[in-house]
Length: 447
Image 1 (tube, rainbow, N blue to C red):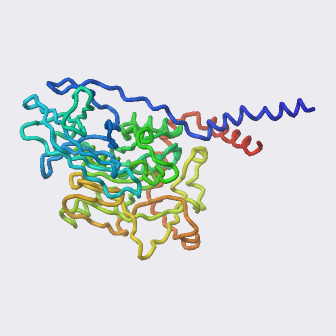
Image 2 (image 1 turned 90 degrees about the vertical axis):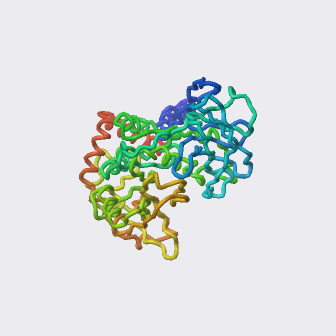
Image 3 (image 1 turned 60 degrees about the vertical axis):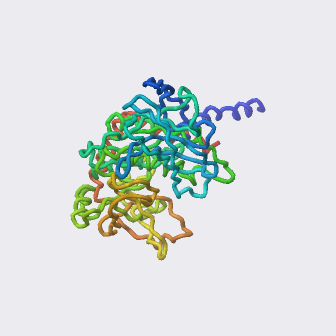
């Protein structure tokens, strides 16, 4: 009898191991970007291909470089810095015009939105030398050094275009770590497409295997561009004093990178978090809405939309928005969450934006810090920012939530399009996944 009990103890272990891999997303290994060598006249060294580059002997992390001639002829590096440990920095320009190196002292403009953390976003700005026409630049804390040991960055946006490949582009913030909210992600992307987006940019850390399949589908389709964001491998925060979540994993930095990345690719850029959608109330899509707002407000290039929080805790009683297919997919079903919180009096309402990127110099999550032209706060009667989040009872009791079915205007096309995505991604795997997931979860409850 004791031997039988011993076997019973060991029997559930294989199932628990399988349960762990089923329920928890995988952290994919980080592969370093393949490096190439720059050999252009006197400019010799490593040409940077990765998303984040740590400067040697310096608490500075460079993301990307962009030419900016809207006021002066300069190069702007999107970066992250430790604001208490800033050193002098110098831009080493590789001049293609006369085959020389020009060294200019940089100006470091630290973004004010740091969330109380020691590290935050910054612009490293250098005026370009006269008659230089640089294609590549390096950043170094000294005017002296070996060029072969310096990282060299390509300067993007050298050509300012007046015609654009895309009308509307969505810039999402950093994908949350171990992200597995597959259903809401697909619903949001399909909503963006319905509203007029041609491209969605996201900065990826790691996610579940199902999310990897979904991202692969959208990348192949041409809708999504995934930018690797291995921030935790570069910026180390004390888990006691600070957290990456407080910082948003560098969301302000990626927001500014996405603005400059699309400066001459897209007519407008839409800023959203992963749980947000800017919903027009009087127009079928973003284009007709913005065209109308521009006609009424000439010269406006930055449009703000009020955030309205819809509770994930309260569900619509209509079961037609909860198909058998969607029940098998992990994540939030936005069509079932149509009860929103009332706005708080005497408190600034958070906003997100649709912007002409050429009107923006520097932005934070909810505002434009530096820009050109006029701004407009769009009336909640015209559009709202749908934000589906967990409801905090301490803020409002459920009896104060208001029913708002604006999202249902798009339900027919949304349901059809989302089903097509999952049919393509999963095929006949859906039934197997559902049965296997329920079986493993049942075992977890028993043991």
